[in-house]
Amino acid sequence: MINFYSELEFTLKNETDISDWLSHVIQSEDCKEGEINYIFCDDTYLHKVNLKYLDHDTLTDIISFDYSVGKELHGDIFISIDRVKDNALDFAVDFNEELRRVMVHGILHYCGYKDKTKDEKNVMRGKEEYYLNNAV
Image 1: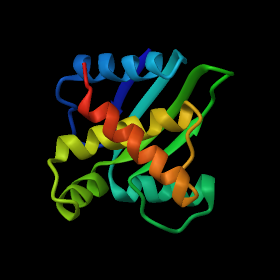
Image 2: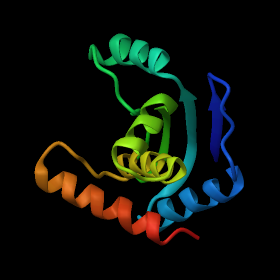
Image 3: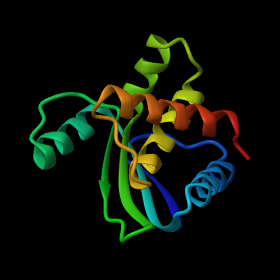
Image 4: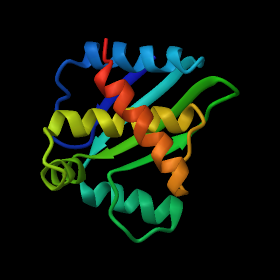
């Protein structure tokens, strides 16, 4: 089950469509959908999470906590709407496209994809592009 929560005044448009799309991504990656929670927040909220749990004193667009068991995906994905807005401007893309990119990025991490090295980043970006262009 995919759940959406917000720590600020933000409402995800087309929740059902996005949930169905993310479920499709999970199935396409040969994984099983468990409980996945998206928590939308602002920079201040996510910065506090970053400091408290990861000891990182930086702003970021996404932090995911993976509680998956094997191929059954579970976790909490925190997304800063402030960062997504800024990134959409920086990359000259629509806010909703950037938001979907960040959302699928979290799922892909749960599916086992990494993004620490250049090669890993290229694979991750390719998967993001594939799923953004092949939404159900």
